[in-house]
Length: 359
Image (tube, rainbow, N blue to C red; front, side, top):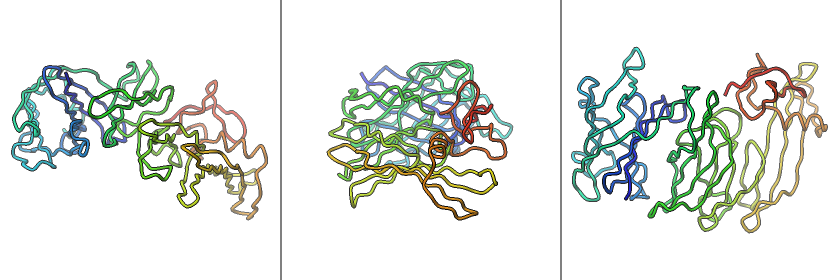
């Protein structure tokens, strides 16, 4: 028996901080997912796992139907051939206004009822949903274990979920990625022990990194825009088995001409004379038979003011390896990443200083 999973994502954008409500219906053969954001009047999706070509379908709010006092709301499927009948209608929603402008609403229900139009069977179906879980990034005291959140990107025969964990007084962490077969919902693979930042439905991206025309997997390590570079972990898709590449670099470029990859990290700083300097570490990889093999590493130091250009010293190399790429120069103790923290100290200009995590 399949379930309907109803998720309401309350946030300014899906890449920002948000609260997510999940409701499930185990009563009949329903396999759809609904995502909403906090304004209720924008970004909505319907996810139908039976339709891998259009897994994520945009919904549009019937604004005339939305009234917090009337406690009902209707959404239409923008991709439907017949918008009049393709809709989700929810009744008896209890709202609590969360801002002075009335644009954000907290849902109080532990049960939601309504109807939805199943385009596969061309008929209305009743839905009765129970709250399954609730994720609120702002609630530092909450805790949960192994919540699976469906990801926006998918392949024709595969979908992905982010496995999330949170301990009390700590941030939400991406523990792993689960990979499922579309048709059977069979678990094909687990990628575990990641301990990465939480990025809601955008923790993974798909990109061909080995030049065979098949999309491979990229997992985002840090908060969206938390630091320079893409900062992905890459996995090669080999007959729907995803193989870790162990590529290094804040930013990685794939070159189809010579079937290579270049990982790099740029570290901007000031020297003792207050000159602007750049330390750049580069790693070159060759691709062979579903593997990337490290070919060479280099490190260069460039002074923008004196125009000095040379190889790095060992100290400069190590400093760049440990340096955060988005440090606040006005206050170096405020760090916008969460990868380096030791005894309430952070690494800055070759030494540990008092600091705290901002991201």
